[in-house]
Structure formats: C-alpha cells, structure tokens
Image 1 (tube, rainbow, N blue to C red):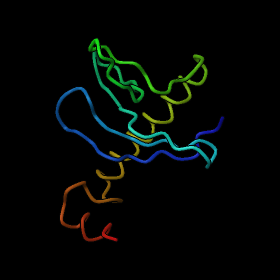
Image 2 (cartoon, rainbow, N blue to C red; image 1 turned 30 degrees about the horizontal axis):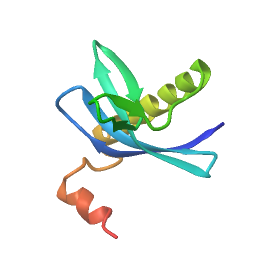
Image 3 (cartoon, one colour; image 1 turned 90 degrees about the horizontal axis):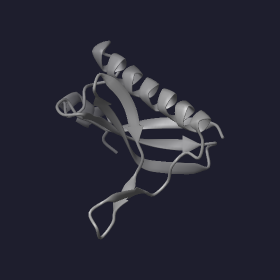
Length: 106
C-alpha cells in the first residue's frame, strides 16, 4: 500500500510529542491523528488510539507487519523534518504567524 500524502496538522515545541499528522494511502484512505514522538533520542510514530474503561489504550488502526510500520515511520518522520526545514528556509510560514493565517485563510 502506497502512502500518497502526509499533512502536518500541528507541531509542538515542548514535550515528547512533536507533531500530529494525517496520512493518505493510495489517494483513497485517510488516517488522522498519527503522532510523531521524540523520546530517548529516537523519533517514532504512535497510531490513533481509544481509551478503554480500565484506563489502558488500544490502537484503532495499526500496521500489521514490520515492513509497513517502517515505511509509515520513515515517510511520516521524513515529512515532519521536511516541514521543519521548509519553515526554516522560509518556504512556508511558521504556524501561528500572522503571515501564515493570511496566506492559508479560506
């Protein structure tokens, strides 16, 4: 299954959660609320989950095998770093700036 798009929805400067993203598969299926996490000097993704009555969490959706998990992590984390670089290079405005609000208003 091919990942055809990754949209960075929100980024965070503090704490281990660095971004919330949406991933599109084959231009036909969207997966929202995938989280980019940085913990113990490693980046990884956390899938959307639901809280159980006993307080534990269960993934709503997840990769079935290591190949798909690796492809998902590489693509999402790569998109996150490209987004940060585009902000740094001035290609896109930083989130929350007046320029960003004007240029992306509908």
